[in-house]
Image 1 (tube, rainbow, N blue to C red):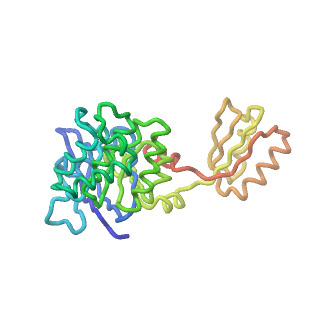
Image 2: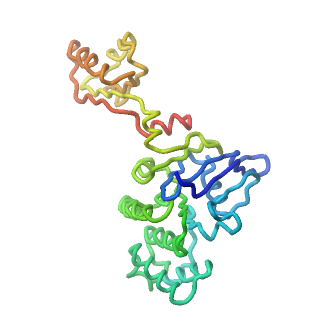
Length: 304
């Protein structure tokens, strides 16, 4: 994997409180990475330090081939709560953002118009931002983050304030963007991470709890599961399962009519469980063999 950014021992303290505690990781070039973690894990603080907007207490951030220049020139950033000058039009705001990065003249005009059109804001370019919807503002925030053609695009909770339609539109946009730039974004929506990203970083209490290629992590940590749903409560049936060595654990859900089993090997477990259900004449509605999800791994890692 070609590295675009490396973090070593990154730490941020506020008085006696440590928000980020000596984390180290790398981001791959032309890859999308999701930064996951519960509230207060240190995600936003980490992103702000990567962007150069917050000075770390200790540690350093190195961007490939940018040792002697300000890495902020090569990073695009959308904060969790972007702030706009509502009296500006979308086009005026894009010009303003471009000028901050030293763009000017026809190059700036062309780049601004291209991005506004690409992000579905071409028809609204001359409208004042105060009249934009939440989804439009989010797209404008991404457009300004891309104005200088960054090598790394960092987005802090980009879908958190969007309705389902706006979220789907933004996910489709990010799927297109990851083909042309490296992407790092924080999110609480785990299915978005699975759909968009090749890599994940899971933070908890200011530290990296798990990091790596999402497929490798899934294969390494996945657990065979069997779910049984019945027309009647399954508590009595569940209490008899401890005699089977392939049962790791079980729990009841759905008013006791849904039984979720973690098993050693689902291929061995399925016929035995089906035979036991048939012998006891339990009215089964659903019998499903699967593997643990990224969400269950996340909850396990953060201790939820």
